[in-house]
Length: 362
Image (cartoon, rainbow, N blue to C red):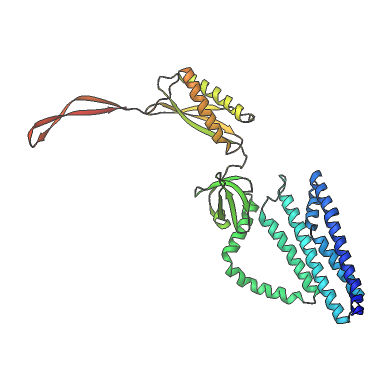
């Protein structure tokens, strides 16, 4: 019994010491690199450190287990099986690190403003899946399993899978088409022909998530989105014009109305947002309406959702300014005039009654 305990004591100590060393490296070195990189803006260093978190301990334990196997001097068969298990485990751990690193760098690259590839979960998942597939093939090769027949079988079975997953593949390639054409990107404000509108929250391999202004998510399949008519309020630029429809009484001085309206619009635009270069609000009279001379006021905002605040403040300020200047904003009204007696209508119980004739005049 003492001989058995003495034989396994040293290997156990090797594994334990390796685990402690790995834990210290993970908690001290890797954590310090992550915090320093985050503080100084080193994206690559931060992503690398996050990729190694937790895996350093696993690799250290595997290294200690390899040393313990060498110390035990097992039979050739047992030694070969043990080393193979450790090798496959090490390949799996390295694959996890590589997948984390690749997906993290892809996400960091696609989130940049000057990137060629827009930000999307699709590319992150594709990169992660590709790295995992390579890791699985390497592990199979290390186990002595020929991957050529496996690839052939996957090629033959891929046709059946493609037929069974037509909708899924349609959404996948539609998402890639949307990203490749740069029709929509994460963070842009869009409106579909079906009426839904909001910010693009994410574009995955199957669907696109649109966050409405009410903070609700609208989930749209990529194939549906690719076939829909879309208004993108962030293309070609974020700035957009805002039109406010108004009307003044027929007796108003239109030159005064135009001057007062433009002054008020300029003041409100400068108050609620930074001035927009090379733009001044303007007025366009366009209709002799039933009760008013109607016109449009053209304003401009830097972002789609800014129009609500702009309209709110502009209408309040313009109403106060019109009241001060004596400019009337009429409301619909109708004048009824009696022109005289109308045709006589018989009454079964009495003499005929004369009904007045009415004429309506707007």
